[in-house]
Image (tube, rainbow, N blue to C red; front, side, top):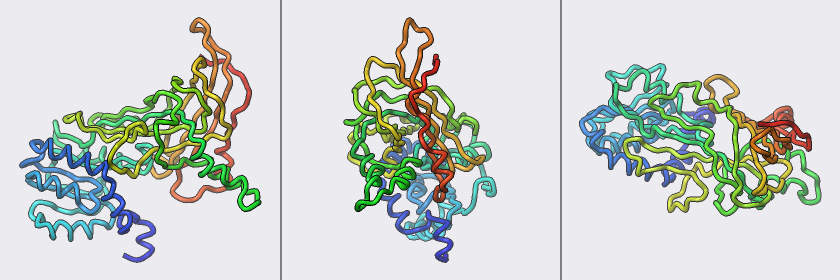
Length: 357
């Protein structure tokens, strides 16, 4: 591979491979489920999608799989072939390079294993590869690991994190760099947060069952309602996900900031900073709308999140005069944001009242 190849194929970079192997949370989840559900794998044909260096394929082979197809569209498969050979599983594991829509497997498979999740569950995810493989190659009654997923939204204070990531730019060595602060507010950041700063209960904005999910189910446009359990200044929204395997619900891979996991994870939480913080109180209702979608069809490496968020009082379950608190867009792009991109992400909130159900 040339240096240009590495720029466009990050999965084949050594540092990326190392970081993924060091993601203890997801490796422990897959290892535990594969071992606990080895009866689903023994003497079966298994497809491991986005196989990377081949760890999950090796686990399946170790549990007695008759045949394992290890597939990845990255050139990392060159390394995968070497790893498979060095571990003596070349008679069980067949390594293939390409997209599922372009590949033809010798036979249908009994199960699909894939670490398909991305940031905010969907961003840079491989979920479309899983759906393509399911529709073309999964036998009736076959399994997908993991197949159950949920995405949650919660409001948080996180004043220190916002100061480090955004407000730092207000004054840099005596110079006003607020233009960079606007850039920092325009895209989500991935950070490790704790439950100590949360202001609300988590609100589920998406549930998926990959055995039945359709492509149109992957785009979110829904009303939200956040219940306050601790008063404080809202500085940001957090998005986090959980995934499970329906055949083994005792095991869960969760990015919930309230959980004290002994394992490190790359995903952490996705933080959406707001421009103007405001106090959230227990006797106020907080409602709104969240949209999360791709900017181009079937391209999960370019996405946008839009939130409108209102506060108001409810009288006898009737219409309420609400105050718009947040009207903001966040962009998740493959490259850098342009000035017009950043401008489109500035908060349009104000003290404008409006009727809201």
